[in-house]
Length: 118
Image (cartoon, rainbow, N blue to C red; front, side, top):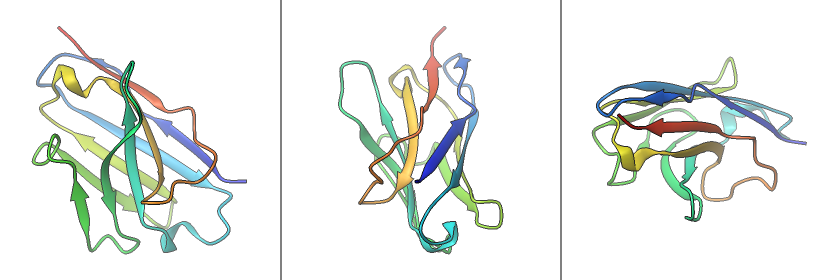
């Protein structure tokens, strides 16, 4: 059973920064073989993809709305996925989740709430 534990969310002012973490465990194979991604879900909206990173960190991709402001990274030895978020905007307010890229696992973590407001 895959377990994903996201953390690091908070209430921040516009222009602020946060670093999200996701600790993954219980996968069939080691964390390091999976391409991973961050997703988010704002109130009233469907969950959407935000950013992804290849298994060896050689390739990263970002939604246009966060490009240049967010950075995805990973520590395969610790099975942790990160999302550094800078210059946060009110429209970034959402619950943030991590999972496998393109084919998320059936089970999701509880997510971590990011609220950007003055």
